[in-house]
Amino acid sequence: MGTGGRSGQRPGKASTDGVGVTPGASASYQYRCIECNQEAKELYRDYNHGVLKITICESCQKPVDKYIEYDPVIILINAILCKAQAYRHILFNTKINIHGKLCVFCLLCEAYLRWWQLQDSNQNTAPDDLIRYAKEWDFYRMFAIASLEQTAFLIGIFTFLWVEQPMTAKKKPNFILLLKALLLSSYGKLLLIPAVIWEHDYTPLCLKLIKVFVLTSNFQAIRVTLNINRKLSLMAILSGLLLESTMVYFFQRMEWDVGSDCAIYKDQDF
Image 1 (spheres, helix red, strand yellow):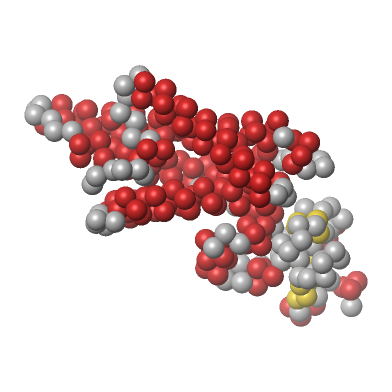
Image 2 (tube, one colour; image 1 turned 90 degrees about the vertical axis):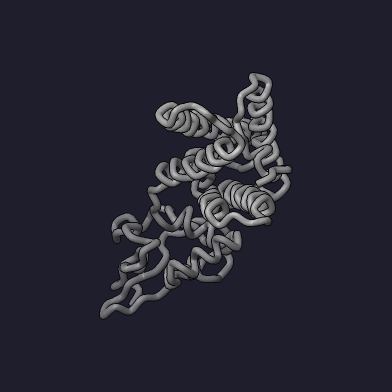
């Protein structure tokens, strides 16, 4: 019965479209076991008459990827809970090409929050056309500053991991995959908009929790992607925050009202 099967992923799942393996390509190890992180040739074998059998990992003797049978909502919930298995499924066993769009949208959310706080604190008496012009350019400025700070955060992480490369993995780390993982794991910034729309007395606390959630997701993405221990992942996150805080300090010394998230989640009166 094993000679009549086809390997790949179950068709029809929204989170796994287009990632099946053709029979001739099954020799390449492009998947990972979500339990032990070992490489795998296939995720399931499709026999005749629609009979599917999930592949068992040769290392841990568990299903290579149980999430191929799960609903995308369940996978999302597990990712929100920062489960390593869900992260491995998303990063290694699916093809998601929304990293750039998600990054831009998250930066827009962050820029809008900063712009909103800036407009809330400024009292302009200029004519309406000048006010609209100034507000528009304030938003562009906030977007540029948020982008620079995000870049500094990523550079700090990659610099630390590059210095500690002999300790992170036996083989050369895949920094391109890590970049995609970090961009995907920053999806928590999308919660900034609802936090602003439904403003209440606990908004500053909500913003702090969002910041912690994003950093926790980044931490898990680093640990899963490079298969390193928690200490190195934490040190990488702290290195990124250090460089980001340094850039924020530089902007403040230039007397720019940046509204950085390094300070935006602290002692803000709404």
